[in-house]
Amino acid sequence: MDRALFAAASGMAAQQRNLDTIADNLANAGVVGFKGSAQTFAALVAPGEGGLGTVALGPRLLFAQGKLARSPGPFNMAIEGPGFFTVTDSAGRIRYTRDGQFSRAADGTLRNAADLRLAGVRIPAEALSLTVGSDGSVSAALGPATRVIAHIRLAEFASPERLRPLGGALFEATREAGKPRQLVPGTENGPKLHFGMLEESNVTIIDAMMQILTAQRAYEANAKGVQAADEMLRIANNLQRG
Image (cartoon, rainbow, N blue to C red; front, top):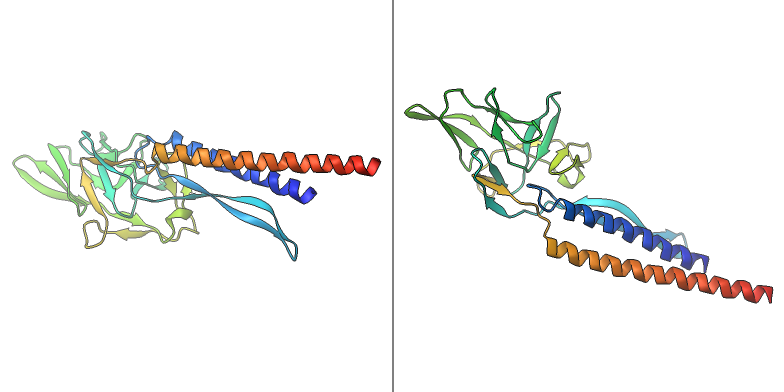
């Protein structure tokens, strides 16, 4: 009966972690480029005794493609397919993101709302407008002429789900994710850049709400298991006393 109590209680704890993960997904459903997570579980097994309960192994990032939506921002971009924008903070630390909301800074660099600089792009002061091709080529209108001033390259990881989330749509490289590899957008079967668009979060509110209902029912089922095991222990104690 102690094992039954532990098994049900561990199930409750695992589903609570699951609910926390789903709630975080919902809270970021409106964040551009956000990637949701799913909680992973494993069975606790004693050698020769079978299952003892459930343990949550932690969230796993899900890099399904989000919807692409048109955006009026003059420097907004969206990635279709794998890859990340490489951005750098003021301390020179490299980060990775799918959030393509950029604006032109005074020094000609493209920066996002967190003041992270897009690698490899600097716009001349005399540039009148900017366009980005699906192959990552950055073209600027310089007076009557237009010329390519930079090429955006994307970063790809062998195991992107092992990247370290830093909040919102920002990630940090880890040893488990593998070394970043440069991707040239626009190649056959490769990623493409869409200028004037943004990638929405891959979290859908309806799916997340259904997941919450399923997790709540599983939590309640485990809670009833705890109650049943507790009642059985109470009856066994009374019998021993009697």
